[in-house]
Length: 249
Image (cartoon, rainbow, N blue to C red; front, side, top):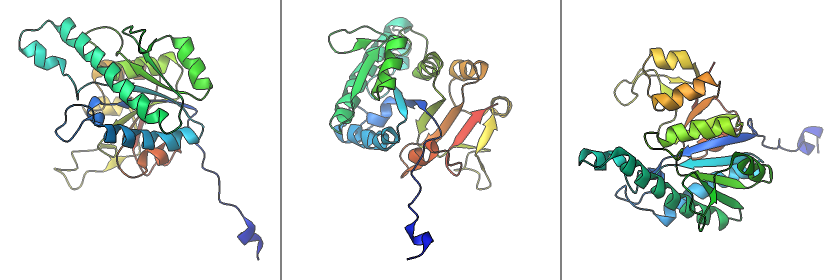
């Protein structure tokens, strides 16, 4: 046996210590894009577990588009504040479903919400969230920012800055940011890295403008990655630039 044969494979290492993973409510949706599908919740949990096993501290911010879209109510004459608060409540339902799926995989989890529901979740408290993360618990942050007129993208950007995360990872169904729509332009190329200014000047859609500006002003990197493609998220968290796109300075 040669010395080369005795070498052990390298232990996977994460490029980030603490991340905020932004999930849309649709990620939990059933076949018709509505409701909560327990199988989808389990699939999400199984994507998160390998990253947790790397020792990465994970906070998840989740939306509610599978349960309620405020714009539907507004278009029918509902007050924006009422419509948005309904969405915030929906995020708590999604957070509890994801918590259950993670706990069944043996991952200790806490749900915190900006809209207080003390019977089912902790109130969001920044230092408490950080303490949970330091103890290896996944923290699922619901309730958006707790204020109407702000999206869960903005909540993810805000919480990432508050808890001193290394990066915001927006989980999508596309494998990064492209120079053009790859479905329409076969010559479109994926950016491994791109600056905030280039995203704005090229009018590339990444996050809503409030969320994007909050990240830019506080130098919080953003990663766009295909959450559902094989192990793309796992590889991206290890710093593999052959998947996803990182936006920063």
